[in-house]
Amino acid sequence: MKITINGKEKSFEGEVDTLSNILSLFGKDGDYFAVAINKGFVPKHKYEKHEIREGDVIEIVTPHPGG
Amino acid sequence: MWNLLGKKFKSRFLLGTSGYPSPEVLKKSILDSEVEIITMSLRRSGAMEEGAAFWEILKELPVHFLPNTAGCHSIKEAVTTAHMAREVFNTNWIKLEIIGDDYNLQPDPFALVEGTKILLEDGFEVFPYMTDDLVLAEKLVDLGVRILMPWASPIGSGKGLINEYALKTLRNRFPELNLIIDAGIGKPSEAARAMEMGYDGVLLNTAVSQALIPNLMAKAFSDAIMGGRKGFEAGLMEERDFASPSTPVVGTPFWHQEKKIETNLNCEKKNDLFTP
Image (cartoon, rainbow over the protein chains, first blue to last red):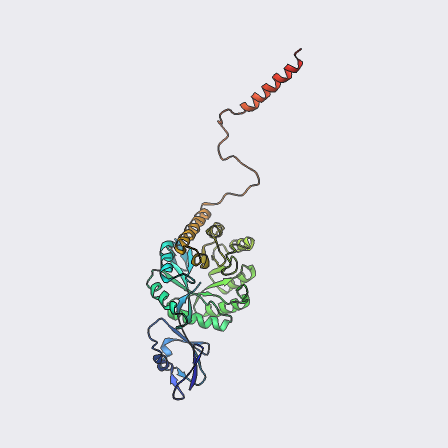
């Protein structure tokens, strides 16, 4: 399965995986990040059940300075 | 105290957190100026190494976060960013910024109205970054926003209040609404001027972060904003086209004596002319 995470294409084994598993591969936990898939917000309580599919575009964002 | 959406603030200065030389300088700027509201953004995880360092310091400070949707060019992007920001920063405040032109970073008024409508329905308190257009403001107020944030001039330009007439018109039209100047302020005197006009607050970033000594500039803006507000509350005098002595005239020593002496001297000169 090929997906795009923060603008970079990544390959994973299998056809479907959960968002929770994908995030754990990146060491993402805690409160200070959020996720959008295909430009739609996915709240934290849906990570466990949200299925990631071929071609999904995932954005993982964290707090940064801003004006 | 300033009542902003049910919260009480001593400071009417909202400070942006971008472009500082270091996290320590930003922290000092926040503490020295005693700002209580700072703006933040969301960016891709790991996109900027220093982003994490800034957050580690900022999250410990006694401030309220106002996340923005900076960089968004579409309603969809802005709405999704707002939802992500609500989860990360644990606030329903959002500075809604949808850029319509990349040259002057002018907000897209049509997308702003549409995005505001969606986010209000989703339970957000929208701080709309907007131009100073009166009709746009009316549309946003009709939707239910409780705050308007017109620009003074384009972001980061430091041009100050380029259209005082439009800003005054907004103030007069919406006397009960919280109006915050957002963007374009370059000097403390310009911030003071906005506050003297009756604006409720000033949000700025670049004028502080790019100063030679950012924390000193932050304090200068803090003082100017406070001074301008006090001036507004005290009631500014009406401007006049003529002079008026501030010192009482009654009891002035030598009152009209100069004129009498001149008159007497003139009479003496005239008498001399007729004296053979």
